[in-house]
Image (cartoon, rainbow, N blue to C red; front, side, top):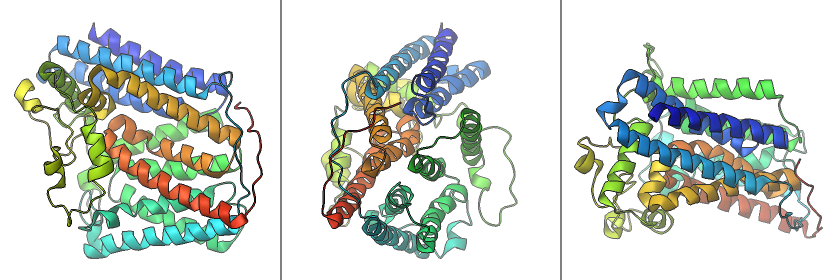
Length: 435
């Protein structure tokens, strides 16, 4: 029964992406992004592990069937929520209180915010001895003991989205072009030389989606499929050869993708163990980890050294409440591994994690509809942000989403607010209907 359930999940992933494209005619619809990523983690991965027999070294077939039922229900909720949020025949969007944007003020603010991000990134690189030392070993990069400095690199993306927006790109200024290149390069280095799939996906999506949406254009379907496939293969390549990708490497190519191997760090296996163990113990976090991300994480460690422990949540804890995976499964979760979104929501909310994923789908759909209907301003930046974070949403945990989303959206709002205030006049308009 397990394989049919996995194949059914795959059929629904494919159907939802095709339906969304045929219904809305937009290769940038959120289901076109979310469905392939979901399918890779919850269809391709388990099929490879089933065929190799490695999956059943960690969980039984009956346990795997229960897990896949939860996965299937979760994707159905995600897809329905996304379609409900983006439907054109539902409740119409309210008129957007559009304010005239001062393009020069927007770009000036972007240069300032991006400059802060560039300086912060440079500090992390200098701290480890420079670019050569930062990327002379596998999974390299910069570092700072201060989380605010490390996270300030996300300001580069805030500035980049503003400069690539319809309002920010209405100039052929060499200064703007130079700033775009300067703000892109740290993320390219971190993604490619650091062999990190998250930064690679984020910067590729930020540039590509912003460029097309700023011009109210879309790539042809064939080009989008080929481009998305190439990006996916690149991400698999980076993860599989992470230890060999660095400056001065002799580069020994790995034959098998590391993330497809039967090990406790595999997202599907770790996620399955998390669901089964949480269900067995019957204890869940009930939002405590989310609160920790919003309230505890912003407090500097220098001020509150044991902040996560004092709050009752070990730092970046992705296991289960009331114990560990080892207690119930007989094998331990790997430090730094992620159980992916379905298991993470299950450990947090039990069965309520399924409608929660449906709400996230609705939010994605609504963000897309606003972006294509209002056609500019903060709406496009907000949508590109959630698309950039889609790889973290599916393959990581909510902790990986919350702080990134908070930083990107908060500073984007202040940047656009400043650009509208500089103009000093409002003009209200009814949004275009989504295609």
